[in-house]
Length: 239
Length: 222
Image (cartoon, rainbow over all chains, first blue to last red; front, side):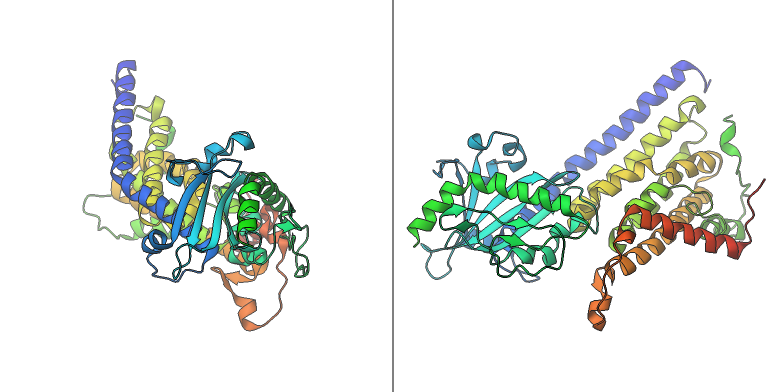
């Protein structure tokens, strides 16, 4: 009986039904928690690109208090009625740069809420094996990098995956994007352990992860060029 | 009666205590003389892939042990109903079920860890050890011994994984569990990049197999 086709088909159907049911149940009942984790992670990344967070800080409160998010088009104009939550960067990345929706998160000073302290821009690109993404925070001069946060989907652990470590990310601090009004970006160099503190557009590389570094460079060029008008406009206004 | 699946059948008497010698051997053998990685040479792929650092290796160990033990129990309960012609796909379905469950739970409750491991957790599905133990043991034994067997093999795999990860992280990056040992001691240390590549893991694994076989007096059968 156990070898009959009917039994096999029924058995397979039952297994599919039971497994599918259990998975659907798990996915639905855990979804709220998972979504909350993702949203919190996003806020944490935005905040930590600009300010240093301590263990136990209430991320949601700081975010609500200081961060003002809005969406731009490539000309630097604010898209009315849109919130950054509605923009999925991974989807925008596939569009032509001129059609992208560009979220910006501006940090207001605690003392004077009309003053912008930092502006945080999301970036998205491709590393060596898979997608990489992150946030770039600039100071109120819209030129000096306050900090960066990178994440990745599948860079080599110990090599390219180091882009998500503080050690590598701290190398971007204080570098500048513009040189006399032209966007020069910042570029990760080949090789590691070189002192680039006098070179505002060069960042020390990661040994064994030159290609991931190139991916980061391409990402910065691709995405920051979209924000060029926004940056220039604000840099001029804040001078 | 399924044929090739019962080769390692262990006869467990009804009155046998839970932690009888035989049952304990099911856990302890895979740690050494019957280690799934170094003796049976299974699960090599992930042993090379997730061992650059100790933390992901550790979580992978826990993940695989949970999946191996729980799938073994599930398959063992079902073993008398599974049609032998579709037994592999049934095993696969059960393993995938557990893997996705683990993945979903990690995402919901320990998001930080799941972020580090997403790809690796999914890879447990294809780990030969899990399917190998289901096919060779759980299909022919009662749930409790199957559980012990799954547990033992998960831990045996984890032991090797952690040993390789220790060697690779310590010599490759100069740290243990992300803690910079050499930097803390003030000793300048240039990490050995070779160990961070899969080739480095292969060399370490080879050395571990060599040591273990020497200690156990292993002879290749001719």
